[in-house]
Length: 397
View 1 (cartoon, helix red, strand yellow):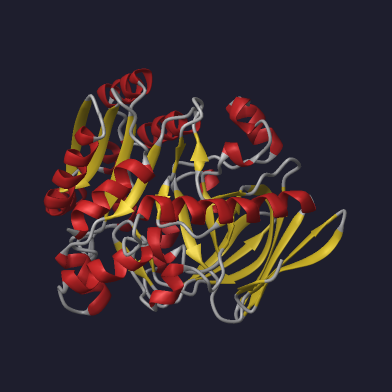
View 2 (tube, helix red, strand yellow):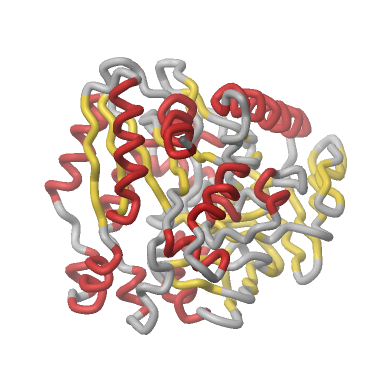
């Protein structure tokens, strides 16, 4: 029953499938039962077709182990054409996340693990920025459960995921509509302040980030070009915007483990100067982070700043999910890499050159890291003065 409620929420509340629309599902072989339920829900909602794009952990390890970096990074023209056809057809897409083996790349070359066809990633992002509806959700499986609880207790993981995704509500879709409206209201209040600067301060963290003229705070959900609302991430507890790529100073202490290229990174501390990451330290996995940051020039600069407080459903579960879709929504976070053009007034209509000149970041990566939790405070500064937004992990604006 929980899988059916999950699938219904993903289809009706996530991508909000419209009659006659095509749906693409990115999924792992470990998610077969869930992918089948989502496919059934999509067709029941009126989808014209559903195309699953399968991956498999052991197969991905084989590729990283044996293929060259050049081949792992090579553009595939047929893949670009496929994305263009999905866009032209007005398709929506779903990504089911949840690694069946979070340690599958242990012992392999970090540079090869980080390698991927960057042009394909950018093509998919352009499709999203141009209005393609999408949603990303976590798909419970034994490997993910073992990483969280130390044993493959999928039922326990489903309970935690169900709480985070509000599957316990009488109507999860309506419940998410209410939560989305509240987060959107927070965004509107932040917009009214016309902030030019944001400061995160807490144990081990003191980071000041510049904001762009015309910045718009987003939260809850988005609306496509045809006026159809959707939720890009389920769960979501954040309000966020894209900062000035050239203005970030200070240091952050990451408060939850980060999974990068299949590796779990712990004890991560990152230093920024003149907008750029200049130093990386970690208890485990620092070399993976450094390889990741070498992906391209934009990988070392911020593309997102986000605000989350202790009222988050994810925070209230007390669970570290080892999955950034969930863990980023437990507390305040930032992300280096690709920014969101729609988070700036008129950004959607700008060329990539105009976005870069304005100060939006461009990269083939987008990596969220949690810097919030108990003790974190966030202040904003602008023409209307300095204002407290979050104090000791509690929203006070």
